[in-house]
Structures are given as structure tokens and as C-alpha cells.
Image (cartoon, rainbow, N blue to C red; front, top):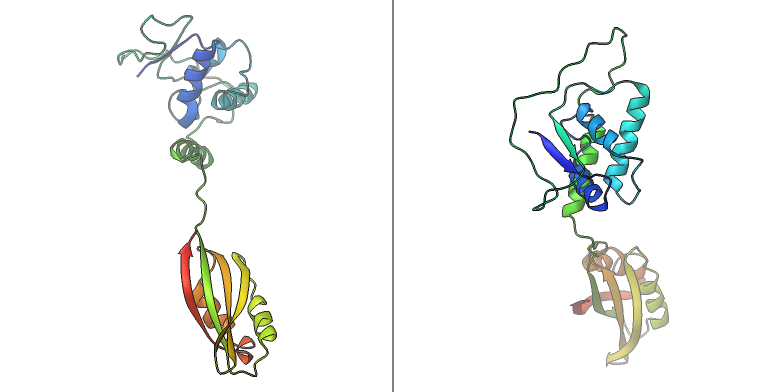
Length: 231
């Protein structure tokens, strides 16, 4: 299928070409051809880096031209100096005509225009995915948790108990305000807030593997979740 580009030196023409090359490494097919030469020749100079895809393609073709000739077989591309009144870019009907093959070079040149490499395919896929992806990165959810931490008896050093609690440190865990609350018979419990990143911290793991395990269980008899709220 032939492709027509109109006035690629204008801003609108360059933008159309930039959009076209978003998911392509070459103008047509999976290797450089006369179609790339045609569009390359229509550009008066290297395009602005503002047109990321055109700039990438242009530098690639420039480098290839310095090394050897481009594959002579193209699918057909036209460059027009001005666009039709109705629209700027059109795709003409399929045509059986193909560019004439040039005489083969007698020199054994390295084939730099074989099938598209895995790296090029991956780059094209990543560019396509970037278009569909949201511009805002989704942040991990957070939760606010209120814990009741109970001592063994009225002789337990509550300051040491709180130090044992706050000594638990891990990525995504932040200890907050705390207070002592009487529960009877001279015994007090520690109520303490904690903020966690849901994807990084499990409250059950914090309680079972840290707060009620050695060495913290020297002071802590049990630990209960009083409130659990998403932030």
C-alpha cells in the first residue's frame, strides 16, 4: 500500500510524520528501503528534537546512509509539497506498481537492513504501550491502623514496651502517636497509630513476626487491631 505525505517541512506535516513513526522503525516494512530515502530527501535538514520519532528515524537513516546503500525494494511513498483542501494526509489505493530494482553492487557489503532486530521490535512495542499508558503513575494505597498492645501484667515497664514496638522498622511502615489507656487492676495498655503502604507491609506479619515474637514478647502479651482505615 502506497503512503503519501504532504509538505513534511511544515509543522503540520512533521507532526503527521511524527505520529506515523510512533510505532514504526521505518517508513514501510521492517527494514530501510527507498521509501525511507524518499522521505529523508524531502526533509531540508534534520528535524527538531521536538519531533521525537522523526528525529530518531532521521538519525538512524543518516547513519545507515553513511555506511551503505538502502534496500532498493520499497512499497511506495509519495511526497507532495502541499496538502489537498479536505485533509493533509491521504492513503491512495493499492497499486501493483513497484519501484524498479537497481543493479546489484558487485561489492560484498554488509547487510545492515535485514529483518528488524529484537531490540527494534521491543522499542516499537514500548512506544506503542507508552501511548496507551496513563500519564499519571498509580500510587500504592496507604492505610492507617490503630493497635492495642497489651503487657503481661501491671509490673511490665510500659516505656520499654513502647520502645520495643517502635523498634520494628521496615520500608512502608511509619509509627505515629501513642497513649496509655487503663484497663483495670493497675494495668495499662498501649494504643499506637501506624501508617503503612499496603503493597509493602502486612499488619498481620508485623504483629505475628515482630510484636509478639522475640525479643518484643518479653514485654508484649498480645496485640489487637482496633481500627483499620484506607487513606
